[in-house]
View (cartoon, rainbow, N blue to C red):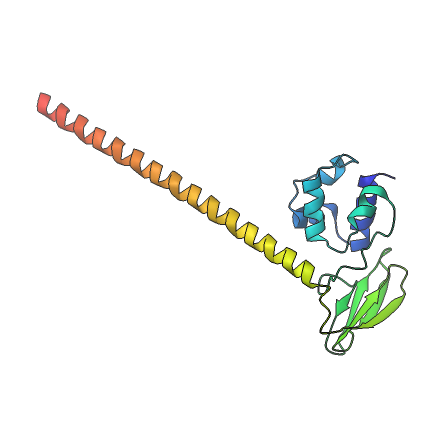
Length: 184
């Protein structure tokens, strides 16, 4: 089984279409069908950012678990959700079997493994294990803001160049009109 087949298994596990997966990750249409063991690291990075619960090492090699149990994916799916009440929800797992989930108590995390086994962990407020992930995401936001600012500057520069060219053309047209009127 290659990378593409493992990725298709993950997409099926998530219960989404290949097209939706490509949209979420920011890939072009039919990108998944073209993937192989030589898929670019930048593409794998996009997948990892969009789906932090996917174990990229497993995706690349097939070794280990499909789901990265060390990633906090609260609010993204039914794997590792955190809660503060008695909310009940239904989710589809692999095979589209409906399962009922009760959200965990405040200060706990309920982990539902692909096997259906449920684990409840108490969250330690002093635990900084998510701080690395938070720092990485903050850095990513800063990088994206910088890229946006650079693009905005490029757009403004091009708009200024276009305006300058428009002004030059207008001046030239006025001069031509003046010279044509002077001839007559």
